Amino acid sequence: MNRHEQRVKAFQILFQIDNDIVDLNSVKFFDLYLTMPYIKETIDYYIEHQDEINKTISAKLNNYTLDRISKVDRNVLRLAASELLSTNTPKKIIVNEAVKITKIYSDVNSYKFVNGVLKNFINE
Image (cartoon, rainbow, N blue to C red; front, side, top):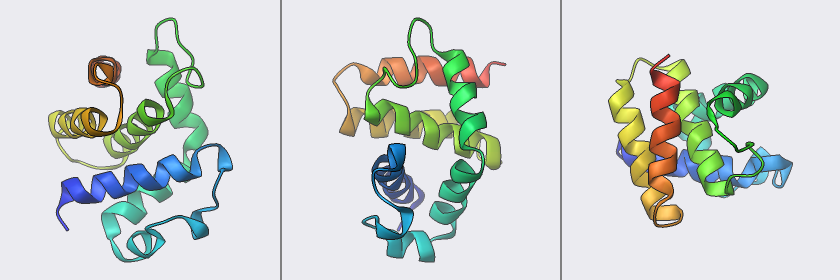
């Protein structure tokens, strides 16, 4: 499984555990969480730093709150922020991957919003 596919699965796991709707141990792809180091590390980082990550993303939103944006966009941003803060992966790659995932799972123009928020995030 390549890194893009792992990011998609990590996003899908974050989507499921958003607002504690599903327990991590009960999510679809839990087997991948246990066996794929990138997925486990990214999800674990988000869970451990959830408040900090959400506050950081919220600070980059203009005229929005984290709860007001779509669940897809919110969790793509959480995934990207977790990776930006916890890895040495080039920032441009992380932003491009977040945009790709948004184009697949969200509204037609949501990728522009996600791209803008992440550019604000990395330009600090």
